[in-house]
Length: 233
Image (cartoon, rainbow, N blue to C red; front, side, top):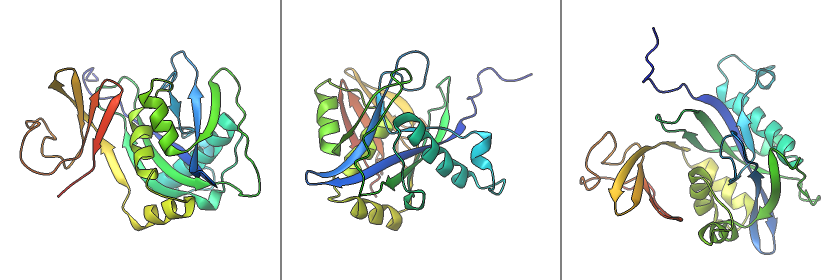
């Protein structure tokens, strides 16, 4: 008999953070998910989705990263009509939906670039995807704080990091030089209406007190404001 309290097994997924350079700085492609029961309904996200059987064609059975890469490319085109350069994808981070969630995904986020000679005007179906737009990371974060758009945590944290890079090439170079950060959060109540997602390597991970001495790797949620504390010694 299965254990009804056991966490749902996360589905392998791929997400592409499509990048392009403009005079205003680096821009990322975001799509606005429609309503209903789809994952992150109503939010603005990077295009992506679960791996399907066809994404594994021609790959070794254990090449899970490769399958997520193919899924990210496919989903970006399906959701926005934008082609990303297959050879440009760089592993950026890995997010696993928290264990208490009823639907879970284990998602590789990839930085990707587009052909600089084309405009890449996004298209969308008006149902699953309600809108799509290129934005600088700073503008996307400002619009979230102003209540104009909703950004899920993985998008918020990713945009914080990308905001520091002047060009797509600089962002990808930094990603190649770093080990992708893996996120599996544990949700904690910090009181006063604040919630905290604690990530592995944080001193509070595993149920320890939030003020336990030691390293920090967490995200504090206070209304629409999110404060990310990257891993520190």
